[in-house]
Length: 173
Image 1 (cartoon, rainbow, N blue to C red):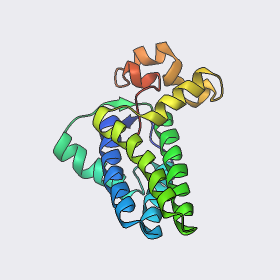
Image 2: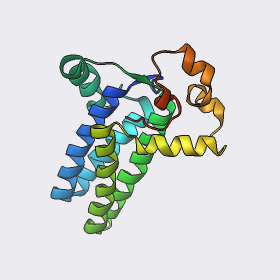
Image 3: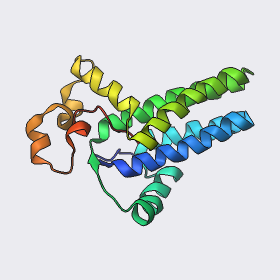
Image 4: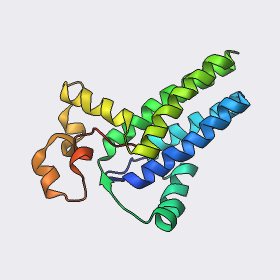
């Protein structure tokens, strides 16, 4: 239950990002710690278990992708989990700022989250995954964390993992 999937359907990740955008916009408009908490809890659930415990993940995997999008594109899971972790840090920061009475700072922080989630949802560009790839190329994240991200032979042997996704440069949930 507390494992992150690998690989991940990129379309499910993109639809989840779209749902995050909607909730983040609500958080900015309402500017209430409870909404920021719901946003942060969603990221925590996705970091812990991918879509398994996440209502947005479940909606994406069980409804949006199979009934609306009807496509599958498998990409490596570790960069997606890394991106979710960054989302947790950003949304958690917004929550703390809101609890401390810094509503405008919480709104600005959430705006950053919206930009990243919009890039993922609309363009399929995962900012967190790009950072993951950068850190992996610099040796900060060991190759063993995501063999498919850097190993050309693994990319060629698994047609479900696309070339850009395997580099960890354009993927996320």
